[in-house]
Image (cartoon, rainbow over all chains, first blue to last red; front, side):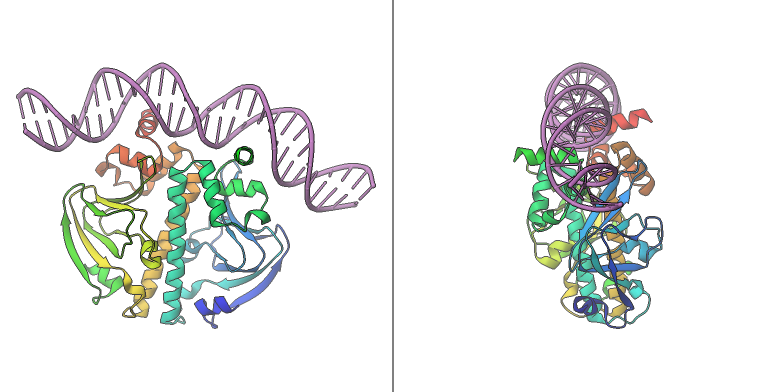
Length: 175
Length: 175
DNA sequence: TTTATTTCTTAATCTAGATTAATAGAAAGG
DNA sequence: CCTTTCTATTAATCTAGATTAAGAAATAAA
């Protein structure tokens, strides 16, 4: 839990939980007050549209934090489901660190840097979705997350890229 | 400059500059160490792809901050141009507030909340781009920014939505 | 005002990727 | 082990939105 305490401090309430494959950790539609730190395993966050189609928003492997920050800070029901892909060891921590003033300046600064990094990756994702073809996005995904594809079924990669499994299969055939 | 000092403090170096319509404030490819607070006017940030096509990443009207945070924090060349749409009054401030420790805890907390809000809106944008049709995205844009369309040429709205002006014109004709 | 430039609209054609469907392979469960 | 269920591939067809083109409307410039 080293990395986590470094950001959040020891005062933060946190608990480790063990999940099997394909267990749902968080459901769409509720206000989420928790963050999920992946100690071991692999999880994903995704939304489900009106047609019942899933869209993977992000993956979280070891050392990643998955959380719907906006839901927490602004008390909005989360748009995201969170589910394990592999059996996982997850640190569930309370996210109300904005409200109490336990945090020190350094922790807040570290936190700001993490938030900024996330903004950066979301920014790149938006620009990518607007300006690149499915094939280009697939190639960038492979470059950015070279280790993930081995652990993921292809249909999930497709869902992350915003295309169908059929389209991804075709792209892969072309290479 | 009230709103700004509230977040950044009075110690922060900042200067007000006046720009005419269609002036470039920041160029793609350079490391950006500045943030831009729109006191009056309207600006946009956009990227240009290999084919020379522009993709608007975001608009900034009064009280908005536009900045490529990732470029600043991680010393990466920015992907974004920033340009005025209307004649504008812009507060340019230095973004190295992570490095020096002038900031107080409250300011850091306020800053975290701003960052979190931005993550939320980017998250919604990514999910939207993946799961909604052009028409749906246009309607959500109108709901989210009801005052902006009057101040924007349609081709810029199209660029923000990730579609061509022709496609937007068609969508508008259908309503 | 007149002319030039940019923006918007409409229509025809084209294409990336969706949808549907059918088959084969892999994994999971009994 | 066999059977069931999930995942990946391939191919045919369809469609949202891109591209191209040309005219109309609006803005800016002279």
